[in-house]
Image 1 (cartoon, one colour):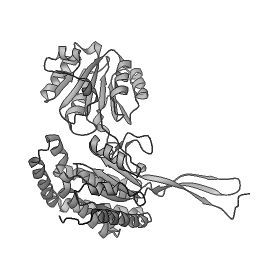
Image 2 (cartoon, one colour):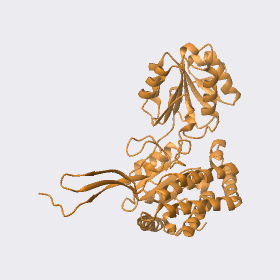
Image 3 (cartoon, one colour):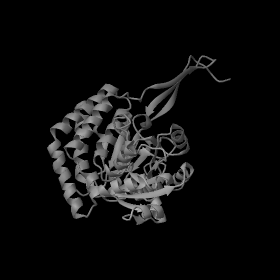
Image 4 (cartoon, helix red, strand yellow):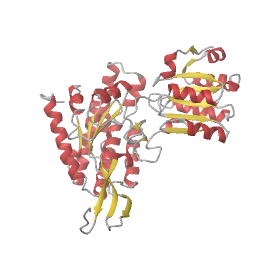
Length: 422
């Protein structure tokens, strides 16, 4: 890819073009936006080999650079993941476009009518690492809601992100939508991010997706509002009253299915009444799946293969086949642990006691809480949102998986017949 001579001018031009496109996109009807999504589906189907070919370049470069197996897994675009992108787009087409929806309408005594109307946020910058499928998820969600998107992926996925963005811009052209509604920052120069984060006059929102280091850098350097989560230290608490078979399935799925993602299980809390029964069983099952256990003293006594956990383990987002395990006295101690070490992302309880479950679900202050369900379900697609642009642990303006609704704001539309304020 061509070197960019002046990074600042390049980013400024990209942001200004996105702003102009956003003004036009806000007036485009849902049917036209859905047509663009349909064209993108066709392109993903017809150009799958080209996508995989470009992705192989990134994978080969990643292996040479020593990326971990978890990071390479995030980076890969295979037939299954391309099919997943297509399925997400198909779902998105069927979902309601919230932009333009009247949330509330009322009439004042003086005859004025006031409507609270959903509108696009405007221009959204997405800064992300590794997973090139984010390119399609983010661009499609923003498009459906009438937002222009500026994408800045990681250097490890540059070729994959470029081909996906080019295809999406081709789909926009076919649908008659300004191509600048979706743009990719095509340089790996870090200066581009620094400049992008200062464009508060043209960019309305930044959403970072990636490791804690990236997200903290964005938050600390942005003059634009940021929606984010720093990390996903996700917990499951195995209560003394539980279905052991069900609990084992959920725990194994939460930890093993895709350990390198933010909603994977990182800490397992086990009620002390289960230390002689379920604890050895689940440790053995985890080891059989290649999981390394970092446990407290009781866990290490019951599981000779476990390594003694340090204080840092309770804060750790491993993103790997490593799990922290601790035995707790009761529900209150489990809640205290989650409050102290958790990241307010996704936490769950495994119990057959509905009262215990209700107490846990109300007490844990996380974006998503689960009862007898894997934490891996914190995902816009799994929540029926079609796709997600990220998971937020903030409380303003969005929380949890961010879908269409969360990519809109609102304004008040007031109509009358010449009313004046006395």
